[in-house]
Length: 504
Image (cartoon, rainbow, N blue to C red; front, side, top):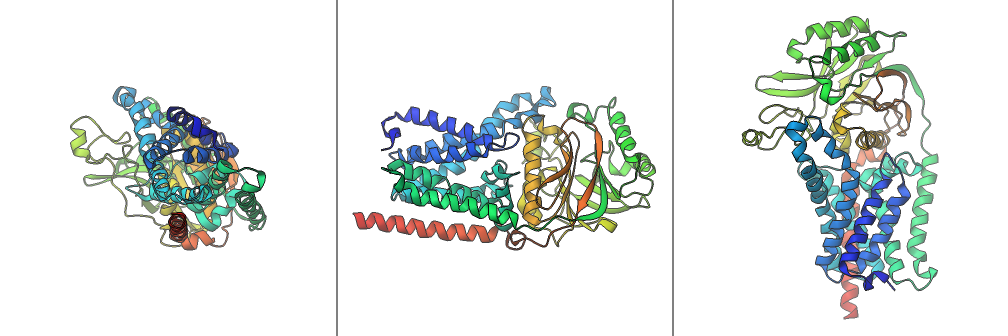
């Protein structure tokens, strides 16, 4: 018997909110994956206690809003950098972001209750429906897959499954391993009644552990990469009194002995536009003394401005250019920017109109003896589709970022976790230079081999790993996972409807 049936709907909503908050503690920096599993197991009996689809939707929305509010609590930090202009937006940003993302999950709860079926059937359908709306969350409009269910597995053996089925597939398996168990508990009269869903959960765990030990060994290329971290707080980064100090700090780190094979500076690390940056670039080239350098810089092209990455070869010549193409809405641009600008609303990293322009798309950057790099600027590492859309196979992933925008709490660690996921999915090492941290070298198994902590100024010289062979996920991408989820959803939907008709 489900005890939640005897609770008032208000009590059930309060309990759902508590479960949502708890479930988010599976994400970085906490990493309590078991809290996420418990949250999804226990939300299933609450869902089954809902008498109507409308109540199920409200329950799902409250659960999800609490989950995203805890997971994305860092989102208030960017609005406090320039508090006079943006602080008033902070509470609205968190509430609307969490509540808006929660609509996806509310839709899944509503639809599943509309379909109906036996309790365990509903648990399976709810898991599949949530998995499908998670795919939608990563793609609809510009997409925002942050705080996806699969992210709780980073730094565990289970994360290696990403190389087969990616984040949406692993998220689906996690939901299928929890929600049916919770639904079975709803009507269980003995342990035997939950044996089947519990066995499926155990099978999933065993498969993940066995698969993890079969992953290829990691070998090194013999190349050493220097990742530079100046630790420039965002409120001081462009201040004329501080910007020269941060630049000089990076030049000092660049000149340090012994010499690496490549030096990487973070996003927007040059305090000038590319068209007027030659004195700064000359200082970089002099300090590098023949070592290639990758750095972040802003550039203009007529009325358009870009958030860019350039590669300076061993002769100090610009050997490559990449423009960020997946921009952060309300950060780097504002939809209907000219209109919004009349009300004083701009992207936080821009100062006028529409803000930054998007580059043409994913591209490979020739990094000389180190091979081909797939460049990712900040936010782009959150999107597996941005990596999958590369025009060819890279030898390594290269992320430059300015995580000073994300504050010092959970945001930078969650961003790092997603970078680790991209490495596992592709079977490629990733080098990551972050302004305030966490700068890290990540191997093709997603393990951080060397890092520089949040809020530290310095550099690390890290060994670059060899790429693994292309993974299954790098070949099939999300379309394969989405197709399987859609077919399973249709099958279980039909079975549930057929069973209901037969009972009638």
